[in-house]
Length: 110
Image (cartoon, rainbow, N blue to C red; front, side, top):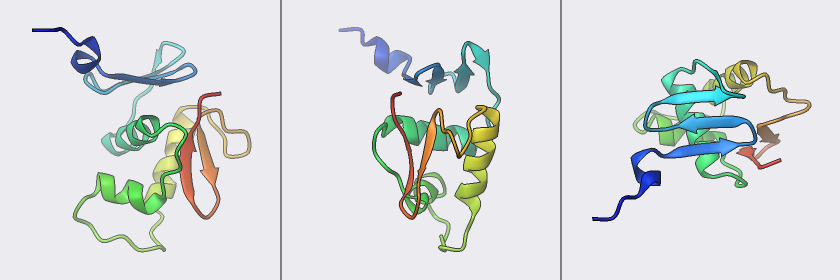
């Protein structure tokens, strides 16, 4: 049987942001960042789709599979804002999470 370390300990990263999906750990510059399960899921989805724009609605449905989404719902916006605060990221000069107005969010490698 072959050993596949990436399947044993899947890790995602962007610059100095590190996310270990198996251990449920987030770090920036080796400093642990405490995330809620929803924040962790949003970050994981964005990192797994690095370079691609994910709409707020798609994020909502991937996280809250059975709940109804309305365009007026600001659930994802609030979680993105809190994520940015925890990651010391800003909307004006994003280091990690970019907002593509009217479309969604993405993470790109710097």
